Image (cartoon, rainbow, N blue to C red; front, side):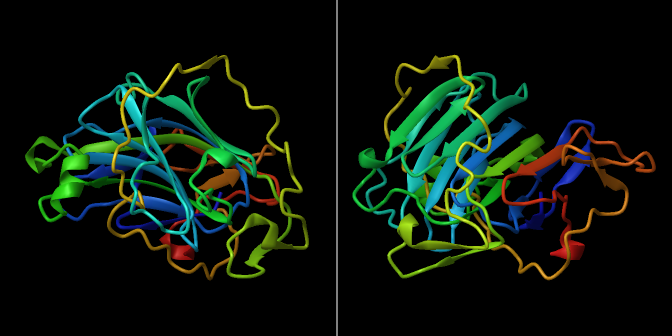
Length: 305
């Protein structure tokens, strides 16, 4: 899965990819250098602790459609889910607090499953939220090609606006850090096929998105049935004023100019996972998989971004 670091690079140890906030300005993240047009993102994650510290998973398009999951370091029992359409954020009424018990102490499997009809967020094997197309605000259902971003940042940094610090339940006390979020594995399935996407007009509607060499939503069901065994009864709180963008400072993704090469010390398994080779000096328990329109998976570092 091609990923580029920005805002500070993660490190890697026996638990996986480690996103650490140790001082003001730290905002390590990884962003995909590819896009998906509808699809499924599955990942095992341990959120970072600490007042004002935010762990994030964000799907975001070039025209600012967005699907978010946010974990606040001040609690270990909730995740905030949210969406934005076309960068319109004024109402701030689209977020929910959903249950995610013990999210800082253990790796939990999270899934975002997104298609033309609904978005489903799951924690473990429980559906904590489902939003159908006609339940979204008018014209605000996310429906354009998305990049995938993971990262940690200090929403409670004293330099941030008061509203951001309050939302993040800060301020952040860096003397109590460092604060680290972990990603153990990621699996991404694109529900469309082809080599690239382009906008057919300025409406941002999915029917106008064009897939070069393929078909939008042509890989429907490519990830198989979404496996769940429960549905959360209701959100655990009201509508949080979650900021758009999700990962704070340093969110831009560098242009990719390299080739899809597996970095030295890593190898790709037949199933598409990128794992340390036997010669690697560090063997993190971290794997990435991508399926659907892409035939290769890579773990990409700044040298090829």
